[in-house]
Length: 350
Image (cartoon, rainbow, N blue to C red):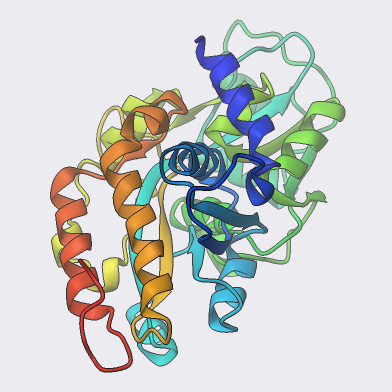
């Protein structure tokens, strides 16, 4: 199957993940909510897992902020967030987190006559666009980096997330690292006071806005850019090289991640060094309670993620995500055994 058709199938199937019609061999349903960033991969894994085991996954793609709220409210079995929680917040909430997958956030544009990979943006120019300081596509600062590319004298329409979003957290984390003004005036969070622009709900909403509005720029997880045939840009990375968003370049950014020494698996992968590193790379995390009142249900959740670690790499890579390295998977599963307990203090895993 061609990659575009594969992605389309996964994303069209995603809407039905919460209500599979496949006959169940088991009655178990796992519930989760949160990040839209990994949703295409989770949807594919959920479908394949259901086919193999009969267990359903009801996952609400509502954004990382919503996922954190729902797991803290104990209305779901797990939460999902692209913004890692700091160790202090994990401890205060009785939660543990672990990385499930890595991928890239990608600026996408809708400019007549410009296709994927043609437009180059420096970190300074991307920040200035989102600050509302560069307002035309033919601005001399953009033109200086795009010799030979015909840029229109068209207003730039900025599109951003309207909901609390881990994708926004990754994007604004990057802007905070590369722009002192952004750091001082806007900052890094799942939701910020945007200087300019239109808000779309979810990666889906941002993709839809950019697809409809001429002269627009937005940011989405890479699978959404591919699915919607959007024109992604080249970004100047930490080493001063213009790079394209690809799985190989996401992997290059993730290569130096020292998960073994990351307390609570807190890890940020933006603006990493390396000639090929994509500068807006991030991991997506799962949140579960350390102390479980329903040990059998908690084990079903862990069984799904263990299956996904073992069997989901191929489908994840087909969607241009980066699977977690085997060594990290082993660390994560050892963490489950050590940290996740039933009401009697006994390990739930394996």
